[in-house]
Image (cartoon, rainbow, N blue to C red; front, side):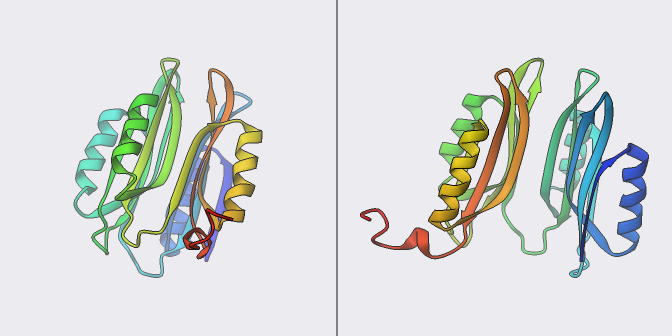
Length: 214
């Protein structure tokens, strides 16, 4: 079972959160955004068949988020991360789930473009991006990513700062190459709306020995 709700007020989101937690679901994705001057929230829940322990928080300051991150670091995996501007200050949200498989993971947040690129070059051989996020801090673009150890070595691709045409072209290209979209982000930049995506190998096409030559 699963459920998705959007355009919820803060109290409306809290009501859904309690409703689905009591019904045996867990939150796997949440969003916060402004429409016509009012702040809204959205969330996706899935049935917690494994009965994993989990937790989620929103509208946290940087220090508050750091406190929860430290609390859950050894026992849970961060499966969703959000950052957004509230009244000129960045607020953070996160969803954690019990790390039953002892998966290696880490979060890098508030990274500059150069910092994100450096992370990508350093980690891409061993880890993969599970969740990517972009937001503005004092008018400067910042990036964050949840990195998870790529234990089965399946191929993956990440692209960011794409315009609508660039995103659409890559979506079709990667689908044809045998990948599926696993994470999608839309965000404002100084140059307008931009998009980011993470794709993961979905068939044996990327491993076909003759693909490059063809």
